[in-house]
Length: 115
Length: 109
Image (cartoon, rainbow over all chains, first blue to last red):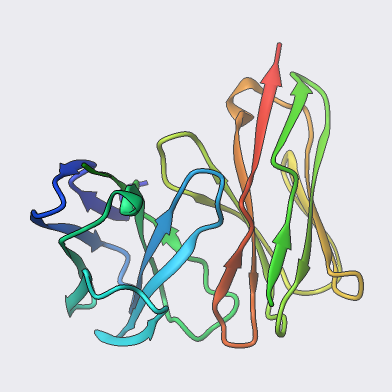
């Protein structure tokens, strides 16, 4: 399934670095999501965009800054991260964000390590 | 608060049947999803239930009881490739997905 792609797949960064994660969906969906997945913990929803507008920000620290230039692309800009931010960052898309039955399709994730 | 509970890990034998349970307490209910996630890969959709009862899809079936806040995923004729984590997620009243921590299923020959 290559409907949702993410780059890079792996990223190691220092606490003072600035980096960006990229997500692209080829499914014609209108909603895109950023999730954080830590070992043995539930997926944590970070941000939701619907038709390029941010509709959800789940109290995410400002060191994470999302950007959605169009319905197909989603970025997560990272700066001055902490070691506890090390995790798998997953991007997902769905037809819409307000419909219960809409399936979310996930990208393979970016494995982030903060030193 | 909102809570999804599922066992952390289960072990089963190739060719057997396994049932993975999920119980939930959420603010509202607009459906329940099951996803499969192989190590290092994306979660992939398995099933969606919004009405009570059993939905069968090949070797995999999913059951829902809304009155009991309970679902299970049933995997038959287990194969080695079924070794993965299985994630339960509930759509709450705000149409957000509330996720369980996942059940790691280990299949032994």
